[in-house]
Length: 305
Image (cartoon, rainbow, N blue to C red; front, top):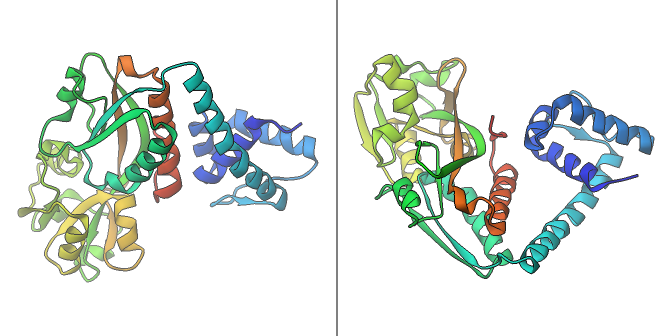
């Protein structure tokens, strides 16, 4: 009666907070997922969650099945890892670099979990801020690069991890704090604080300011997110950050987060991988772990479209 796929879909619904997002994560249509839930509820003779609520509100029966999912699914993942080891492919190398200063928030828990599960894999992490990691990946010096800027390179595959919204942080007393959204011209008289990377790797320039032919009055850089927030809070400038990186500061009232453009500025984070590494069992598991960790720990991310 009850199958593992039912537990997986319930778990995905809790993490995604909507049928649409859960269906995307499971690579199903919303109609197919709704039918699956309806079929299970008819079998059980009880409702599992309340429709049209956000966040999703589960019934007592749904919560009980989620408890079962939390118990069984990690065991299933562990068994699958053990089987992969028995089938070979346990040893290997996973040298990675990141092009995202704020990615450490979800990447470090992912690496810790991966290291425990695959102790035979040689793991190394480098910052891609001082060198070009994608050419290094193509050469074979690296095995994976976390990037928001895919470049068409022979033999490189980009696996989408998640989609997020880039927001502008302003101090709470700033005139922009009361606007419903920010337009490029709003930044023409302001200091824009960024991470110390090239402009062509910053979406606030390439996808927001440059298409409108707008230049900020001044650009200032900082390597630390917390320092950027201190500068913004004291009225020294504004900065653009992923919603998950900004949430811990805006939710405490430290700064105000504003949408860029009426429809928002949405970006996708990718794992760039050489084609010959895609089928390695430990690489597949790392990607699954990275997606699970990001959806569980980051505020405001969604399945990549």
